Length: 178
Image (cartoon, rainbow, N blue to C red; front, side, top):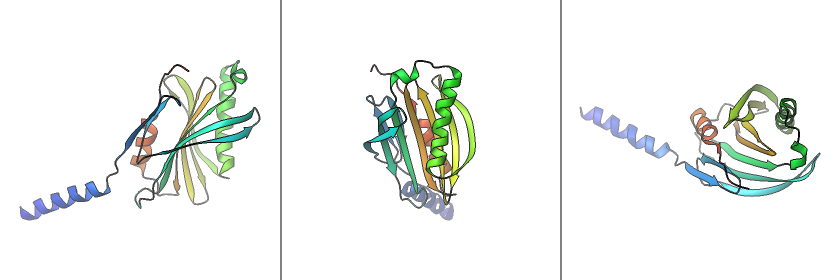
């Protein structure tokens, strides 16, 4: 009985040491909510695209925990509304294809999986990319003229599946008047 109690105590104690405190992140300005395994940092970068220079809002957290050495991030990019006057299925597919192909090209990787998904009725893609020594998991959603990308990047084979799913599943778009 004493051995059983000691084992239970050690299990509970070890579990509390390795458990991460996830933090809810909500931005009405960026119109999304998610959870990060720690306090994320916010930044804005200007990127050059074929439609001009855009602001890329980045909210990210990087962990160096040996159980989960990964980068967690959400990117929001607003494209000019006039570029989205024709929102046919073909146009939406083309835009999402561009996001997927751009991500694969940026890391010189290989597309391992790609599926169509939706979030709150908005079209998206769920992909996995492998590159030398790393893997990237990405959900991209197109909301009118706004592209949201929730992603986890880590060393190949080291991404904690539970944390990956928790992060990607926690991402949600919130309705705010803009």
